[in-house]
Amino acid sequence: MEDFELLRYVTIGQYFPTGSPIHRLDPRVKIIGLIALAMAIVAQTSAVGSIAGVIVALALIAFARVDVRFALRGLAPSIPILALLAILQLGFGWGARASGCIALWSWEIVNVTTCSIEAVIVLLARLVALVVLTSLLTFTSTLSELSRGIEALLRPFQRVGVPGDELAMVFTIALRFVPTLALETEKLLKAQAARGANIQGGSNPIARARQLLPVLVPLFINTLRRSEDLAAAMEARGYSGGAGRTHYVRLHFRRADLIALVIVIALAAGLLVVR
Image (cartoon, rainbow, N blue to C red):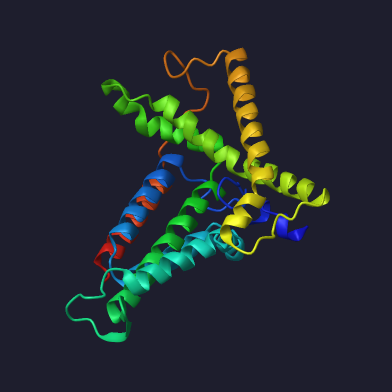
């Protein structure tokens, strides 16, 4: 049954109240910092800069007093996809015929060069850093804090018709249901295995996909049922979106938030400079 324990591999959407300085920051600073670091990492095209982005992300995880091993555990379900992308990028991706690249191995249309190896490193490091940074945001912020932060950041755009409050609600609900869906999938897998279903069987990917149909169908139905229950609960409590709503908790931008924002922007600028 340990093979079906999916919740231990889900890091996004879980909150750890360790009381670190990052936890005490304004949620707007965390969101802006995540966007700035993510843009710097995505814009990075060198292997050294991408690895530096991973180091920065892991350093922030450690500074938040969260176990780095747990943060990296969230990458386990995506390892097969990352391996496939790395193989495709290595043999068929950018750099196979670029000038200044040293050819290492060639067969038919497959060309492995130093540039393609660097491209693989950039791709993998970029994805790892983005997953870790996204997990860091949920590790250090409750869903209520994230909702208030997104609402505050999108409030100026409401003048041009952007529904900031509704978008914040959708975002926080989506994050909230990531662990819930993982737990629901885990229960269904264990129930099907207890009934004798060969969930992990199959000699090829198509056969394995067919084995998962008894799990995907009830998972889809349960998800729709949960969404209907949530909509009914929100209507019963009088939720009406952003029009005329007031806020019990007010966000206050402090000196520590300004210092943290300057540090994060400096880190993002440093990642852009590294080549």
